[in-house]
Image 1 (cartoon, rainbow, N blue to C red):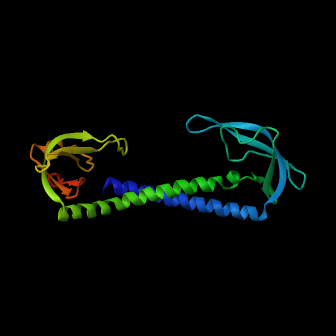
Image 2: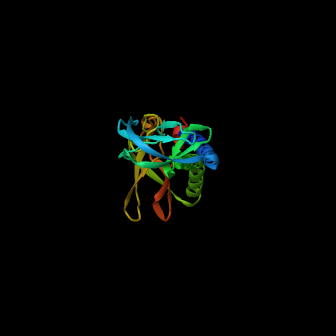
Image 3: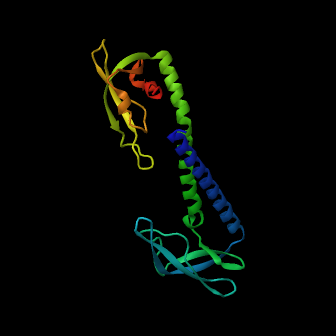
Length: 231
């Protein structure tokens, strides 16, 4: 199974699960708002927290009294730098009737931030995963078109390089670099093969490589690697 297929499937799965989590969070917030009790609260402290990068973020500690007169203190699951609130600042509080411990500050980010962030991340993962899954099909169509309509040229192998712009599980793929001089224009064109996850150097030799080049655009091409499959 190709690396792009595995990576695409994994990203698509995580993306769908993240979108599902975003939707579930949004539904939960909507239900909470349907019955939530509104009251006034005050920020009594700023609680420092460290994120995964070691940076210090701050969460507000909020005090309020519920409609039964009970004193409630809570720290919402939100933090920022600089702090979004200051000590002594008044805030509007929403809490679940009969469960004043389930309280939130009435602000867009406090209520919908988790859903929004999860939705954006899930959408990005889904789009990227889908793209990786569709890439082999698009690539196959491109190659088929070039074989049918392109010019077949013999390119001289130059070197095998590591593609440091791409990394999967700590590994960089190999690419074969080859070149061809257009006998009509005299211009030299350099071609790079698709990503290879095994070093093709032992099988390369000095024989020319077949490259299919679009007749109207030499930047559209495909380096034929069938010789590797034959070994």
